[in-house]
Image (cartoon, rainbow, N blue to C red; front, side, top):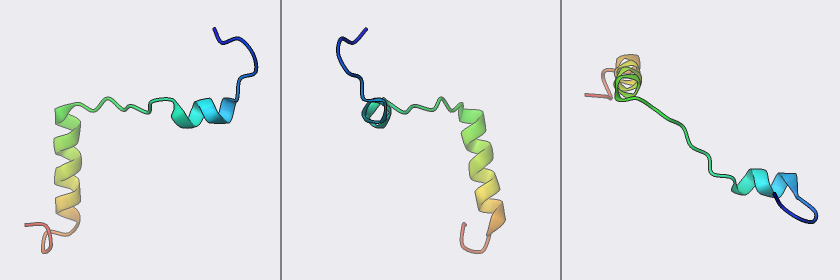
Length: 42
């Protein structure tokens, strides 16, 4: 634990932000984005 004052906003800003994305989900999102505008996303 930390000793002394803790600055929650500072800690929150510098805390690593990670998202776990599976390849299947990434492929599905890609297909959805391409399907939204097939003319520009060939």
